[in-house]
Length: 100
Image (tube, rainbow, N blue to C red; front, side, top):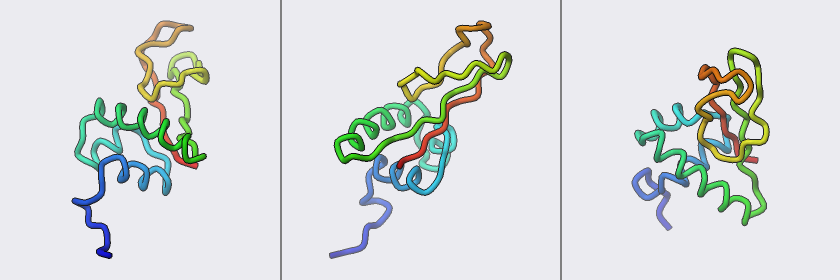
């Protein structure tokens, strides 16, 4: 059996490998894998469902409003929120992801 080469590993497999080793944001994943952030969010949503079937978990460190400190704990989507429901400001620290 041949060792896996970068071209034979899918984007989702690469994301899983990266997030198993460290916590990263969508922007970091986007730059590392040369994919748009929009594509990364779509992959993360699918990866979350796939890992759940395997008994693993995609953990999301929630987004935080940089103005009032509101933490988006209830949010299940991987995409960052557009604005804070508390103060309506848009300065939000993006969520970060890790696989357990």
